[in-house]
Image 1 (cartoon, rainbow, N blue to C red):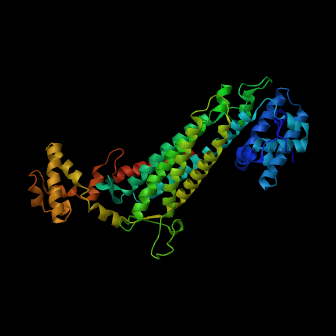
Image 2: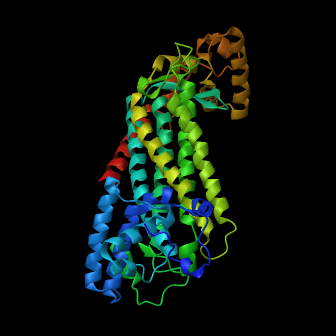
Length: 463
């Protein structure tokens, strides 16, 4: 194996072993190898069309790269720390196989624009997979909402019982969040899918390259228009990690609720055994480990975002070695996101809802108090006065340790003579749900309409 660097002629002594270990990136950037080869083949094709490479060189490069890709897939490619990174390892292997044609491949480019291209090629593919998986989770949530569109549960503010909602409506709230996450990913992909190749080290190249040809071969939507910007900025990676962080925050919120709801104090749901673990000392335990770990991994992804922002904040133009530090947090963000999406798509199909416990919880928190206030407003009482009347009624019911719906009519009328027998229609949780029959409301009819809308949206995206 060659140990001299491609740039070693400038130096009087070799790089120390410690510096090799510290500055080498092959342990992690070899992951980019298939995309590095993809970019190299397009670059070679363009150089051939421009008359810089011969047809024989191109044929040799294609054959050699096919063999190297096969070696990568079987694990037979000998990666070397002495060759620093994925680019030089592949170039060296190619030169071993095809001779000088392999050395000519790097004409008109630099590792600076090469690595920026590789990352963009890789990331756009991963974003496509992530977008698909987001929809898989949405589909699971829509199915769960459909099965429970009229199941009454307490809606909370400040973690206090507020008003009745349906469990289906609650699940659709997360479908909406994931819908925006999907949009952010798709939108981010457009900015990722711009080609830096051709910027070379920082100023472009003197060779007669055709960047439009290379972009077309690689399927890029656009071309980075400034060579300095093309090689030096990683804002596309920061933007992706920001979108990933928001997505993970949404999962963390849902995880928090699943953890609460599975607790015997709530007992709203059960999660299938395959997503839970037990205790080494307490045999009765069933721990929601997956939601807990998702909640923890959210901090990991948000931390990567902070790391990438800090990495970029003080870099002068153009490329700096700092940018070697962009890959590990980016790789880990993608891996964490994909694993989370896959497990959530499966786990939400293993959630069992306990309607009776949810309804009982609604009855413990005077969840229909606002409905009583609205009832009085419709009878002509100003809302602020209505609010005061209901507050006194709630205080009385609390003292009596009963729900508002359990108070006798005469007792309710003692708080307002506007109250009549029809009041009990609005004091039931089901009546409360049905009363909110407008776009975005929690009425079962509206929930069914939203479910139909989302099924249509998801079907359209998958078509």
